[in-house]
Length: 350
Image (cartoon, rainbow, N blue to C red; front, side, top):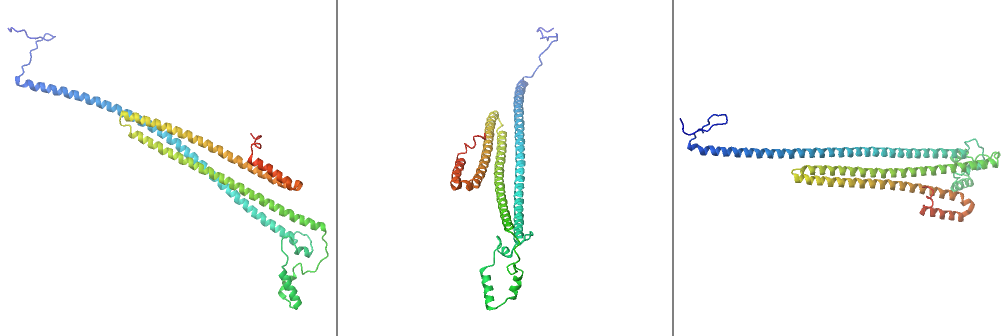
C-alpha cells in the first residue's frame, strides 16, 4: 500500500502526473509561449482584416453614391445640351425660312418692276388701244426725244442735198415722219392717260418702299435670331465646362478617399463643390433672366422706333400740305420728345 494519497479527479479516478524528463521541460515551455504568441498575432491580424474590410465597404458605398450623383448630373446636362441643340436647330430653320421669304420678296419685286416697265412702255407706245398724235408719242414721259445732233445732221444733209437711203428707211416708220392724222383725242383722254401713268408710277414707288421695308425687317429679324443663336452657343459651352468641372471633382474625391481623414476632406471638398455648383447655377439662371429681359426691352424699343417712324411719315404726309413747314417743324419737335422721353408714350401701355 502506498502511504501518499494520490490525487483524484472529480469522477473519482486517480490522476497521477505524467513523468516528464528534466531535459524536456524547457522545450515544452518554449513551445507553449510560441503558440500563445502565434494566437495573439492571429487575433491581431483578424482584427486588422476586419477593420480594413469595413473601411473598404465604406469606401465602396461612398464611390457608389458619387457615381450615382455624377450619372444624374451627366444625364441632366445631356438633356440640357439636347434641348439647346434642338432650339438652335429650330432657330437656324427660322433663319433659313426668313432668308427664303426675303429672297422671294426680292424676286417678286423684280418681276413687278419688269411688268410695270412693260406696262408703261405699252401705254406710251399706244399698246392699250389709246389713239394719240405723233407729237405726243415722240415727247413721252419716259422715252427721250431725238437728240440735237441728229436733227442738225438731218438739216445739214437736207441743205446740201445729200440723201441717206438708210436714214430714210430707218425713219419711214417713225411717228415723227408720218403724216399727221386728224386729232381725234380729246384733252380729257390725254389727262386721263397722264394721270394713269402717274398713278402707276406712284404705285410702283410705294411697292418698292414696302419691299425695302420688308427686307429691312427681315434683316433685323435675322440679326436678332443670330444673337439668340450665339447666346445659346455660349450657354452650351458653359454647360460643357460645368460637366468637366464635375468630372474633375469626382476624380478628386476618388483619389482623396484612402483614409478616414481623407474621406472627411473629400466630403468637405464635395460639399464645397456642390455649393459652388449651386451658386453657379443660380448665377446662370439670373443671367438668363437678365438676357430675356434685355431681349424683351430691345424688341420693345424697336417696336417703338418703328411706330415713331411711321407717325413721322404720316405727319410729314398729312400736315405738310395743310399747315406748311411750321406745322411739320412743331410735329417733328413733338416726335423728338417722344423718341427721347417715351415714358409718357408708354404710360397707357402697361
